[in-house]
Image (cartoon, rainbow, N blue to C red):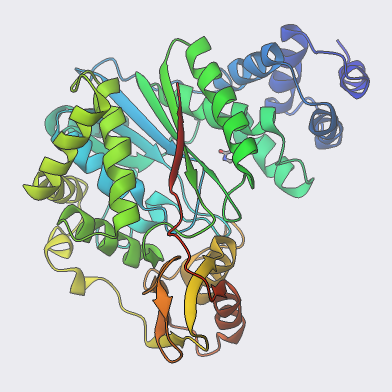
Length: 433
Ligand code: URA
């Protein structure tokens, strides 16, 4: 088989066979096919897309390029949840302890943040001592003992995606539906939980900019999951406005803790309750989503979700007193209020600008190698639909950088105002199953 023939075929918009897809993935992972040929193929895929059959074959070839995690020693239904990435998205930190406290097994592999989107691992590491690199024996034992562990991805999980993603990143070939779907789903399938819940974000702070594209991606990923015999569902949620009030690593853990105490922002709590309700049905703990939501609310009120987070932190070497006393989290030297120059209603808070602003304050990485500052970030004191007066505080900016004018400008530019009444943003649009 020749790589040039495979590129030629895709260039002519002809479907690739399973054998051809396996050939290119194997050859690329084994360094037998050079970057320039794979780049050409990726660009042809971006232009001509792939059929469902090709996308399933690509997912399968990527899935088998490395380790498939063996969770068979964990008793009970193992669930996985994945967000396609957003700003202020600390959902895993509150949701997963909640469902674990209801009896679900959560063997979760998470990622780091890149660009304007944050990552669960970085957030967890703002807790002193927290280990995210457990051995597979420790990981399995912890899930069997306390129902939950959140760790980093094993080194050899879908090596094809590591290489392909790095190449896509520098060849402007990230935004292709089959490439995104196969990239995400190959990792979910390799992590090997029994059920998968996808939180597919759309909006200016997300990969998918429109509701329509969000739905397309969600439907394709659900079909892939089903083709591999996994109970897979997707929820389409808004990412035009940041989720919750806090953006930044330690700030987001604090907000997750507050939510588990029953004092979280409304939008964030609503999302945790809905996703939790769905996960409990996937795990056969609740018969209906409504019943599941009720149980999640009870576990917020009783503090069982909070106790589970604390138990997980302690089991992974973290200091559990951070959960009792969020004052212990690192604090930024500079705290600056962002003042409204308008009277009226908040019409929009652009999630992308807020995410990029937070990154410039030190909360995120522009490049994989960059370090992050756990203390920096933004707290929104008003959300879309809120009424404001000139002089009101819209947000607080936290940073350890002396110079942050560019970040401040971006955050300032994120706001749009209206003289007319504005409804709060709708958060949950659809469930695809
Ligand atoms: N997240 C992934 O893991 N892969 C993509 O291609 C896009 C988002």
